[in-house]
Length: 208
Image (cartoon, rainbow, N blue to C red; front, side):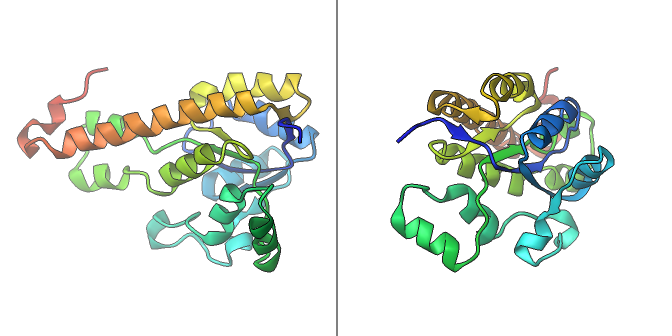
């Protein structure tokens, strides 16, 4: 079985849209079905590119002030299913779960929010839940799923799909997954470092 996989579907949900446009256009050129949420969905629509709202998949709108958008079995099933596993294939069909071959997500700017001396309530809202879960799920399943976990990976990924005509190799997916786990590790470490310090000292933890 070939380890090179053509991307046919993508979930894109990012905070920072810088550098996203050429990727979205390249995916569209390759007839990739794009799922998205909120501001990213609007951004893609404004480019004149078709996009499927995630809520059409989950049958749930964004709820709890945006805290819950993508946390749903139909999203995570689409990311985590093993395409060569008979039981997974059957359940994907049984529960009408769409395949998701690519996840592009970046995390809420937690450290920048802390550095801005924002109130604690604002800092807490910048602890990303859905994004970090998407990163871990896609990175875990790198055999079948591509993960782009940071704007820092946009150029690399665009080069990959341009040279590969919309496809990626196993080694490319493994590389992106490794980088994704580095992103998630640093993010969690930043949150832990802040929370373990007395409130009076928290604002001095971040150096840029």
